[in-house]
Amino acid sequence: MLDNTLLANIYAHGEKTYPEESCGFIAADGTVYEGTNIQNDLNKRDPALYPRTAKNGYSFSIKDVRALEGSFSSANPATIIYHSHPDVGAYFSSEDKDKALYMGEPIYDVNYLVADINNGCARGAKLFAYRNGDYTCIAQYDAHGFLQTETE
Ligand SMILES: [Zn+2]
Image: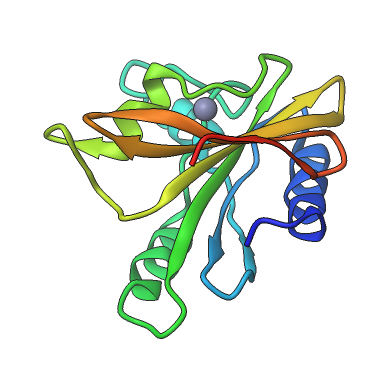
């Protein structure tokens, strides 16, 4: 389902918001929903509670959360939540894990795609899935959005 055309859209979003993180989701039919990263607003309002800015964190807007949650009861549910990592590589951070889990259980039945945006240019992406209590990389894509490795 993740072909290079789809990934080109995800990469373009991450390059557009660089040096800040982009975020959004991909629906079952391949439609990309570009979210709005409101992390800077949260940080401005309450830096103690939200120490991260959009340069190293993401939070969906309320509109995005409603679209995401609404998708699960539709015929075209979200299957992947994506975000970009400016200049730090594509990995699933402890912050990403915290965001994906609630009381140790995945909040949404989705995989997570993290795009590596380096110096304003996409270098690749990794897809993470919840397996045996943790998020593990199940596929890796190159700078052109082509599948490099797949573990299942
Ligand atoms: Zn992240």
